Length: 319
Ligand code: ASP
Ligand code: MG
Image 1 (cartoon, rainbow, N blue to C red):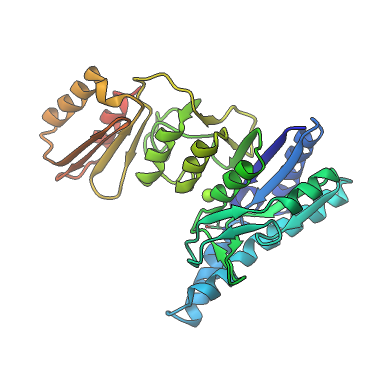
Image 2 (spheres, rainbow, N blue to C red):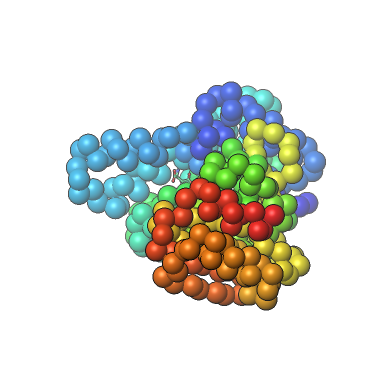
């Protein structure tokens, strides 16, 4: 039987109504004769709130204690979902990071997953239970709770999928998938149907908060297809996998400073595209401070402020 990992972000599990939506999505997949492992984030703004509450108590919080505190958010969401699934007549069990065997490095607040002992997960799947695991957390060799850095439950999901040799890993959130640019800033940004692992890694490292940064790297290493989709509609999402023809430029990311990064496999050989960039630079009399090119990314730091109009012009050459 295939194993599928389904990860749901904080806004997807924010309240009881949404948890019901999530439960129904899980049940649909379970009924297709799949082993289901669910990974959850904390509900809504729980993690942010816990951080501010701690900072009210002290400006010198210890990382170990922050991990103890923040990991509690995911523990609430997994327990609630399991209570709901049981109520709906489906066998399920919630597991914290350590119960799920997720061993990490010692670095509290920014730990790296070292190994996942899947014994417990596999045992529960064998009983046909839906296994619900707390994202973002693990334990270290001192048996202390660790967390993986903000947004880390994406990485938990893909790492668990890798350890279980899952068929695919779904990342459900409130966005439809990965776009050619931030849809909140560029109105005609388009959703991408597919993206290679290396393109996704470049997009994450340029600061687009679509997926946690280490997630595509793990997907690539273990060849786990990652599918990002919305929880709230049935539109096809974006699949991140090994495919991909060359010479299609995928995405524009703008950092807070004046850096524009343009991502797509084989970008370095796309002469028309590079000419398009030069035209815009000339037209707006932009001054370049740094120009970096790699196999799949061009990244330019400008002296000028890159406003919406200029960003839209850059975006127009990739469409
Ligand atoms: N709850 C954690 C955060 O807000 C982890 C996550 O959502 O991925 O950063
Ligand atoms: Mg996230």
